[in-house]
Amino acid sequence: MNTLLIVNPRSGGGATGRTFGAMRGTIERALGKVEVAMTERPGHGIDLAREGAIAGHSLVVAVGGDGTIHEVVNGLMQAKSGDYGTKAEDTELAIVGQGTGGDFRKTLGIEHRLDRYVEAIASGKRRTIDVGKFTGGGKVGHYFVNILSVGMGGLVDRYVADTSRALGGKAAYFGATLKALVNARLGNVRCTVTRDGAVEEHVIRSFMIAICNGRFFGSGMKVAPMAEIDDGAFEVVALGATSKIGFAMTSGSIYSGDHIGRAGTVHLRGQKVKLDLANDDARRVFLLDVDGEPMGSLPLEIEVVPRALTVRA
Image (cartoon, rainbow, N blue to C red):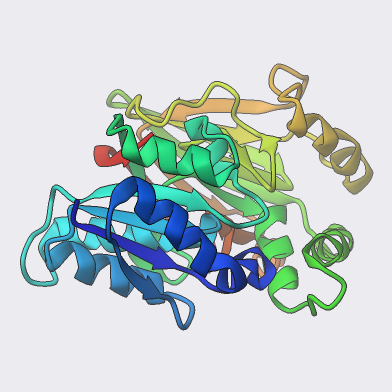
């Protein structure tokens, strides 16, 4: 097996870097010898995955959190485009989850244990999945595999990135969430959804809108329990609460998925989505969260790339 492991040693609060030596032994006993590349900076996983696919690796394994998976997916999609030299269309993706969220692996149905990740890879079972492609937030032709949200989630991401982790990741996330709730603004979002060729236009008042390929984000929030990652469409979900207190009270129901069907919750479905703010006063804090990574603000254009990647799962 021509396998490349792309490892983020900083994932899991640095635990991946400390334990990877032992992990590698377990992985190689199941898969045979592997090549390893360590990420050294944000975005490095994109370059490593693209170059690995072009070099002929048939399988690229993302060892890290959802952000690492996001980078590897972007690298593989760039290799498939052929814009960076040799076109590499057949490289497969696998994951060994090491982050704190693990939202993408929940949609894939993989238990968070090293032996389960290795079993999924070694079994040879495959699933061909959709990928989202978007322009906006400072990116052109960028990809996501799980969920892209705008509003509160992106603001939390920004604050987490600026927060010391001395007290741990959960404390940093909790503090960032409280700060984001104080500073968040209600967005009046112009939303255009194309579904099977038909175009719908909506104005959505919400603190958060999620465009979902997968089901989970925010460390286990089941924002789109109906989403399938291989059905060629996005689920667009917005919470209907228009006050901060209402949003805080309603957001807890996302963990169970009970927000779907509640009064005020918006649920749309389509292959293409365009979003922009009608109220500029919210633009500075109504930010993008892309597979758990902060990425600027609206406007935004998104489309699904159906059956774009093969995943070992």
